[in-house]
Image 1 (spheres, helix red, strand yellow):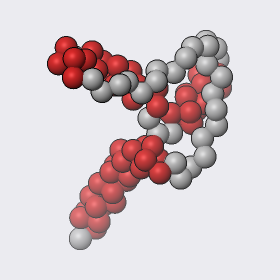
Image 2 (image 1 turned 90 degrees about the vertical axis):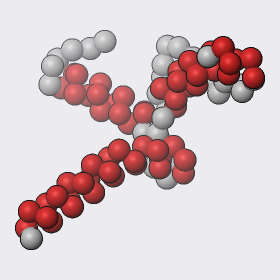
Image 3 (image 1 turned 30 degrees about the vertical axis):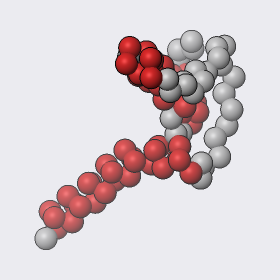
Length: 91
């Protein structure tokens, strides 16, 4: 019984951590800070039949998702803080 409870809790936590960024991206429930980046974020690609057939849409959409997934700003800030506090490294 106890082992089954641990399995359910671990599975629930795993699903929460995997699905919460998607939930955040859809709803925007957690306010995200704006990052000051030295580059432009990739805009939403236009869905055109030619780009879909050639495969360029998939590449552009992948870049867009990498720049705009849920909780990205928080994850970047936490990663930077760990780099500075633990490893004494700045980029």
